[in-house]
Length: 185
Image (cartoon, rainbow, N blue to C red; front, side, top):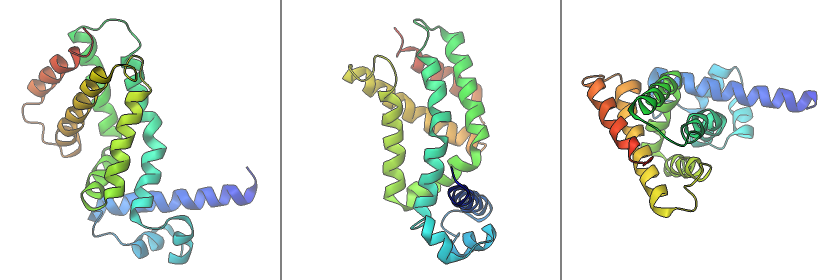
């Protein structure tokens, strides 16, 4: 990568980081492109050279973290067999991931409520995850089961770990353990 490309990549990253800092502080809807540019130390014109709008900023972050989100699912599908203990360990790893990306998941949630493009990309990412896992692409029912489990995990973990509403956390994790075990007969 030449110096100019490197500087452009750094500028893009500064805009994305600033956007997510603002989304965390004041919410997605209350954050403007002007505020994002100012926080990043750039101009609105420069911001618009890199991103059309706030959804573009969110999509850039989603694409950047997608491999880290996909990784634990690939690991889940590596062993031939699972039991309650192995699923529970995996759910704990997913908990750690949700805590690590708490700011990003909160912003994505807000953006999905306002921008269809972000919601469509989130669903697309969920489908891409499923299509990369062994045995799902060729088994339509198992793929649909996976998608339903994934959506349940996403909703439960959003409230437990992004919103911090941990009432009955252990019971929720036990329920999720039983549900995910059904995918591995």
